Image 1 (tube, rainbow, N blue to C red):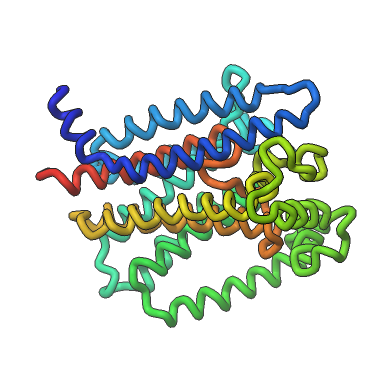
Image 2: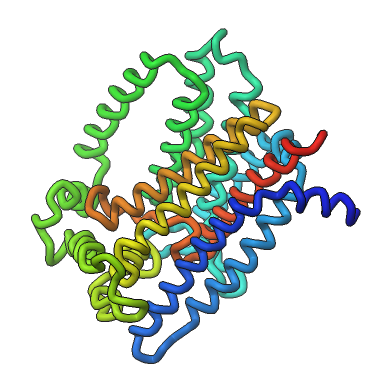
Length: 368
């Protein structure tokens, strides 16, 4: 038993793990800094985040030691469980800010959709590693889209448009990576434009339309709908080279920046740690991507390759959208920065994702 653990630890990618921990430490420092501006120095969120990080590390090691082949073989059953969980949250879940997507257990909120992302990645990696893509590409495209849409539709019923966007992105990234002909992407792009036009006319509510208009021109309503985007951009631009220092960011400390520890934590990093802090954050993400890409060369099966690629795609999309929200190049859609933002479910989901990647890396290095 101990000899097996020793082998696993020897083949564990400690650089990948260190990048994740450093990102979480950076976020933790900023969450503490934000608490300094609360007047009463309420450290509850800071303490909670420490607990989430500790639990995340435990889950990361558990999933890294778990044989990922078990997850592969169970992925279809896990997918069914995911559907049942999403149905359950619609019936028994609690609403926060108009979204019925939370379970509360012992006072802690759990957002199942964060774990649905992993379930969809497992399902798509298993699906495309089990089919002959060249023989019936249209069939595989339709089937993968159909099974993905079931999860997306259930999330839209909550309604959680940000998470539905991420789930849709996972499917789009997957079909891009597995090697479909370019002509299919043209068809998908046309369909998406038709769907967006229909949604704008019949589906989007006024506040959702306003978000898109504000994204195109944040100054259009900078004191109301465009307030968040405007304040985030000010925070990012005011940091200079080395920032104002922890606890000295005017936008975050004076509460001009809403949701500072969640959606806009990158703006807090930019304001308090400056260009150096922003570059460090992006560099650590680049380390994660680089180590994952290196591991693909040694991965011995299609499932492992697909899982790592799709997981990288999800982390990149979340990072890009969140930083884009903070710099004014993306609309405000409520997507947290992986490993950095405050929050239990999103953080634990990201750690589990890295744990499964570590499981693939470990078993690609040993004679399994």
